[in-house]
Length: 415
Image (cartoon, rainbow, N blue to C red):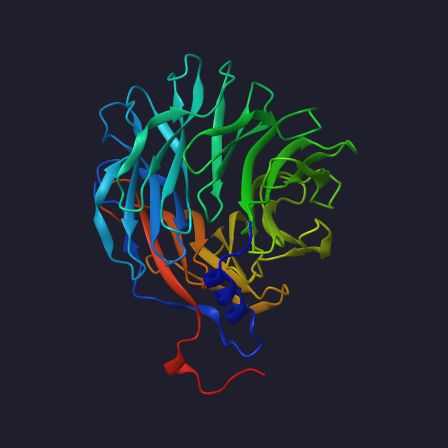
């Protein structure tokens, strides 16, 4: 699938050498609360953008659907104005539904996925609900996983511009990574398939990213590596048809025991991608955030690099997002001198844009679990969970940014 004329024009604009990129991002208004319902805990948020910059935020909310946790969402216009009110996504409300993820196509149609306990007959299963750009449901919720024994959990989802989408999750007592492709109509494209080739130990916490043509890459954490070390990050690339592109590859180069806790991946329009993860030196503390860039053939671009500058105590739970041209931003949580949400921005060449910056304004709520999403032009929104800030346990908060210095603030062009 070729890039649309509008996307191609935007890509050319963002890649122009004279574009002045804001070093820390320009905040667009103050941080804001996402959830309207504030009783108990609202956490574990996700976000996705359409091509016009409109976005959808989803989260896991307690005490609201009548039985355990449920999945809720809120739509926003590109200027940050809410579109309607928050709404419940899951129809099945018995026991708990959580761990949501969301993906948008170029036109703003979106799909939400989550895991649900007991709904598929045995522990957790992965379910989904499609929506039109207006927020109207497209059909009912449906089960994604075919295999239902034991647990299927921690789903992630990505959409191409036309609305074809891929869901990934981990499955089993000693988990493996599985995937299922769908057409834009919601019809399955083939059956579910195992992503990981190496099956020793546990393969968990998958993430997925897609380029403009629908080619996609899946990354995950492995508790053991073929070399015999503990914990590593692995990946597998696929064509838009679902055919593997090459073989499974190891992202992390550090080979001694170094616990990996989470992974994230982002792709630009042409298929260049970046993987981010957190890693400890010897113990499950003093985590740092690392990254590795790749070109669209899957070849590494340089070596892995540390993203956080401040290294005292844990810098953890990274999330990464890219614009069409490959400029990217990484966010993470820090429990160093104080709890906070931090970010670091990079050009498509992997050059840091300024230093790391703090995102949260309210610092008393032990903010954690950050997530970031970008629109094609480089505007991005960061989400996190904050304790006590909404008046009752945890709430979901957000901050919007522009990646590009506004014209009225530009005093020169970079040649």
